[in-house]
Amino acid sequence: MRKQALTLIILILIIVSIAIIERYNTKHQANHTRNTSHIFKLVSLSPAITELVYSLQLDSNLAGVTRYCDYPPDAKTKQNIGGYYDPNLELIAQISPRYVLVSSEHKSVAEKLHTLNIQSVTLDTSSPAKILQSYIILGKLFGKEELANQLVADIKKRLQQIKDITRELPKPTVMIVIGQGMSGNTNNKIYIVGDDSFYNPILEVAGGVNVALNIASPYPMVSPESIIHLNPDIIIELIEDDNTGVISENIYDKWSDIAMVNAVRNKRIYQLRNDYIFIPGPRFIKIAEEFCRILHPANTENL
Image (cartoon, rainbow, N blue to C red; front, side, top):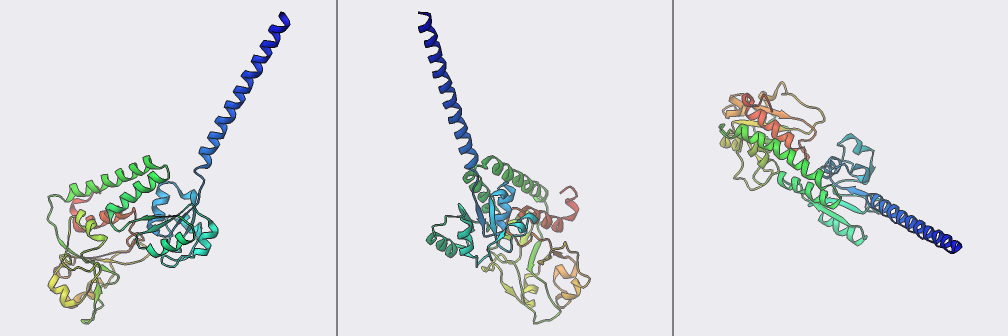
């Protein structure tokens, strides 16, 4: 009887031990699955999207970027897969990413990726609102929803601060120039920001009115005569440059042929050279703050 009881106890211990081991193995396997599920490769075909990926702390998954993706600086250490419009599809295929993150301008590239059985995710960063929406899309897709919501909330808070500053202030008319402005030549024509542009909602938040709102083209070319007719209160030149610029010594001389324009007469011509000026990405909030400082310098001490 005692021998049978001992055998039964041993059998029970064996069964319990097996159950514990199986439970441990199942739990360990589940944890391993959860951990490895986040190990995947991404390729970004846009500097703006690359910035979104980094701010969502997905940079360890970023295996390839374009030659134009240079912010943050670490992006330059990633595999170069070619240009914005001409990415190296063969190289992308060799990387074997789970997703290629493309912009809304990459329709043909996305179709080619599809023929190669490479999945793509299209993100629209053509406006501030769509940039914020891209945060949410990426956050949901890659398990970064909480961080995405926080980043969006932070940007919206900064936008609201600008709106609060400018709500009751006069709204000057502004002409935004793409590249260098006038060159002292009366035949000179320049490109400005028109109606359907990334910069319009930013300028509106900053408390300004675009003088070219009625020009349908996003970046129309205008003559000195057109500028005289538009007569902006403020001119802002956006210049692609790696260094934060200051007003050129001859900036007013360049516009002297149209000295009757308010912005020239009142010496309200400015240059912005920051590296993010031409990237429609999450740093658009910095552009809004820069615009606000230019338009309303007396009211932005704490901005």
